[in-house]
Image (cartoon, rainbow, N blue to C red; front, side, top):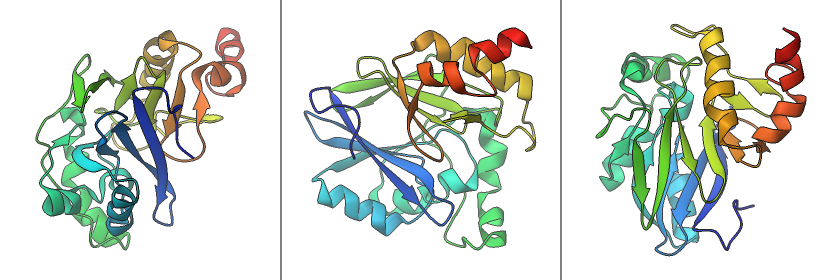
Length: 225
């Protein structure tokens, strides 16, 4: 299934990878077919085959945060293609530095640390073909977590900030629960209830649906807190 709708300037394909089923998103400019991987956590040959199947040209690798499961395939793709790595925010460098050791520990020896070609900050813009995405720094799950938002398509890739019916963990090093709630309610909600998002794991949802039903950040839950 591809999202958003074909008439919009971007298309996206969600590709869950590895036994952990983390979402890698292949997003592309509908006019030029220039593509980016967002959070390529693993299964690099499968991701590269998906590019070929959809006749896409890889131009960027975008990283929401530095955890192994979301960035473990980045170095291998960089070696294969030479395309630039953009993101996350520099506060996640310590997580990226740990990828090689974590990969060896958790049975993902192909995962390696890397150096982004461009660190991203709040308010930055990343381009893909004739389209652009806004960068929103949303710390809490990790200190350097960023979200990629395409305003016209009403589409966001939020990594592990928000899920259908849940929110990101904050028990990792430098996680911060109040900061995460602030990121969701003060940075994501103002983008609009109609924005549909791809989380780091699980199915898509919308900000409006989560404001109604999410047991952690629904408006009613927070107003009663």
